[in-house]
Image (cartoon, rainbow, N blue to C red; front, side, top):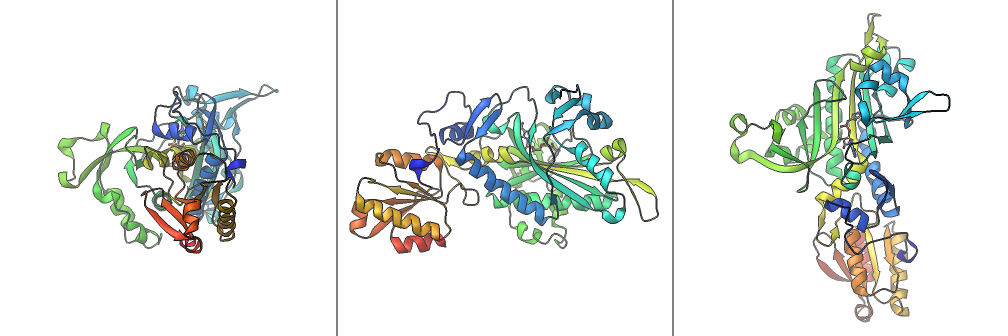
Length: 436
Ligand code: P5A
């Protein structure tokens, strides 16, 4: 993509409405624009990151055996009346009346709707386990939407729902999702700490929140440092055969500040760590809460009707964009991990008016594209200083700096955004390096 044609409305100044780093940087880097309180438009650069995160989330859900569906954003009130949550949900639910005076709502979550699909279509234990997910916009009329997409009113969630014949199998499914979550966050380059949690409006008695570590996080965590080591993930790759690692991980201590009692903490002081966290995922095992109230039953092996055991599993996909920035930035801007970067390479033409320089850049641009590497090519006639600041702000992992002086010696400068390390390489060597 040529920057001269790219819709990237970056800002030089910090927007006054933004209180936290990720919100400031998402506005400054031209990723989002607010439409009304807690509701945002995603511009090309922001949307690209959102889609990259979605792709990793999707791959890990598929890998865990979940099947993708797509449920609507607008739901009928009846199913929520059946579950008893229509009144319980209160003012956070955005209620809508259609032209026939039917009560509808913009879905804050989909337990009811997926249970409704299940009860009409699955009748036998032979069709279980069933594990369905979608990636869809949600609406929660938060009293204080803030921090940009971190706590929005409209936000993108991946939500999965599981149906099992008994408690034991439901627990296996829960653990399978737990592993899928650890893998997902690791692939996003994040350290995620699973913390036992309350179940709130969703219900049930078993639940974990996944908190990623970031200095600006809203919650304070205390946890066994063994939870930080991701080396267990290798073994977790084998879902069926992971030598009890899930149980081991789930037995390790982690608590939010409100629940942490220093006098009764089971972890030795030298192994206890504290850090700020951002909740990016939340999983629930709530048994028969919805299958009982909504009549989701199957015939078991003995021909008896039984209410299925359910769970639900959420990831805040749009929140993750902000969380990733909270965990990866410096004073100059964003530092994207390669796995989600909107472009891998920023190519800077230092003298766009110089024919030779432009020819060299065009050539590199073409070669990188042919090698399947995504490049954002700054072909504008701006000052070098402005170009450098802009590239640092938007945070692409690699910068290629091409100027007449280097070209005289046949070299181009490569800068790694994360470390600031610079290297001088020939054009051919660069293409090889970036390919690798
Ligand atoms: C689990 C999936 C649920 O809604 N039902 C379906 C369950 N859980 S949850 O914890 O309430 O939400 C799941 C994740 O969604 C993100 N999230 C938000 N992101 C941005 N703005 C919000 N207002 C918001 N509310 C929730 C969080 O990442 C949360 O973990």
